[in-house]
Image (cartoon, rainbow, N blue to C red; front, side, top):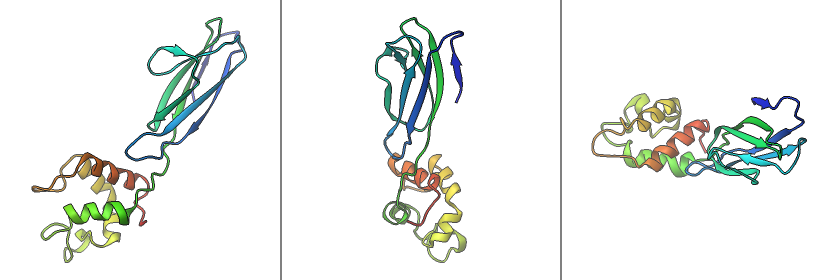
Length: 166
């Protein structure tokens, strides 16, 4: 948190957050509570416009800046980190079917290809970071098979969640 306030002002602001724990949509939030100074308070979010709404929702995890102004135009600037929560993308229900349909075929990652055999979970787990990288930059799968952006995002979420066997 970075906190920049007006000299000699009693304006203060605190915040609470909720984590972004959705994979394909953003559901993090920030709630700012102003105190001190002279109300009413106005809040400036990313749009630059000020309003009375002290809650910003549908946020992706990451860093946000909020400016709080009181009736005297004193400002308090706070930097808030919306945390990334666990998205609970299931290996068995989501990731394995993507791999089976697009990667686990003859000549690529099928049975009999040793550590490249992605029909074995431990091999997939050991390759998870590389799978995220290569699907994200669209260098995998090779050939005519293409992943949708949703499939790429789900793989990335699963890897970021820890590549769990769930």
